Image 1 (cartoon, one colour):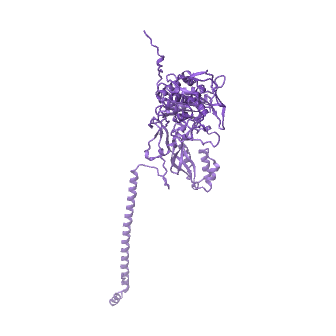
Image 2: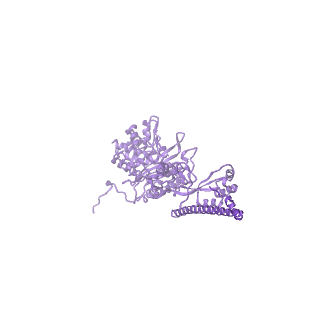
Image 3: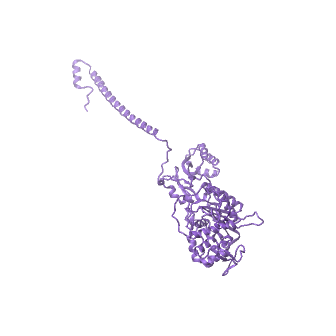
Length: 593
């Protein structure tokens, strides 16, 4: 860069020769240099303004474009970013066979605290205790004023509680959106549904996992996004379930029973239309399991599936049906019932003296232990064991509940001759009421094995033929006579032709032996007898009927009236119309005009 001097020597000399003032030359050069600097500064300023204007134009354009894009989209709540695997919150609904909701998800909020951001921790603790009375003010105060940076306060809360917390107005209290499992029918079908709880949790979401019942048995399916949110359809009928539970609860109270269970099953498909166990619970507020004592004392205990009992005389029809199928007897064969029947040191007696002989039919109608034991002697232990295995009595039921494997039958250590005799009339082998329901459904189904299921329309393959259809019909005829003229006379419901069998078994002690004044009373029934469609098992734990002069505990006085009332209430709901039972051909009388 060439700089021009302010006082060039040549011009100074020329000015002196002409008599001019040399200082004017310096002033002129200063002015020219200043104008040149000003022009350069002006150019730089104009360039900077242009660049700044371009930057502002681009920035405002981007902001405007983003605002336009946001205005054109649907509003959505922002989600908190989390590290790790995503938490799946989707869980399908559970419905009954008619599509009525049994379990669904409900949007709610969790409440957590960040004490470092609180303005007045002591006041917040006091206010929270007013909203949630179960919270401890002293503990909250220690947590809020201590070293903790984060703590959960409530995993779920109602909208009213959320508003009350919001009104506290402290920035250290924060809400997180989440879904909770809701059972809109409360305790209805509680043991079937089971319940759900939270699995992995974050402040913005929490996964819902099944903890019992079908919720746990189908947990993977219910949480699978690949199902497209399709619900799980159970075989239950909500209306029938409600009616059955209402009658069963009333019967349990009336008969002073400790517990009760009932199972209503379709004969042709094995689908369980209703199943109840009392006492029960609300899966929306599932109680904690017992840590000591008898498991059956807990409302979580499912007596229909987990309860294994000696089911008494309800087993007698199996011994007779097998003997009929083997051709050893027919319904009219006379059986020696003179007692007591002595086998080694054991003596088998009847509840009443039925005389020296009874027909096979009357052995069932009168419920003779001696007669059934003598029929079992004809069959033998090995064949009896095989037959009961074919009916499903030696394994847990295959029903779709996580509790089902725990209902494993209790079998004799050695299937001896005496075991065979006692098992024939329901002692020495313990099974669940659901086992009994499936076995009676097999007889009612023409002798083809039925497996219980809780899934509607599962379309299971037909089971093997356990006994001939003719034997199944003869067995149903005997069971019908038990109701019309035998021990289950209180079970006769007009218009529905109930068939069935009573069973009263002394209740076993946990330590061994039997109680003298406690029984398990069962009524196994089928209706309508001439065209079987449904099986109903009703079992009462420690019932005692006190309306008479002395307490009565037998099933005919306790379980049968309850079962009959369940049929009376539910049969119309099942679409069955009362009808006149067809008379037997030999009962018709030809009349000539």
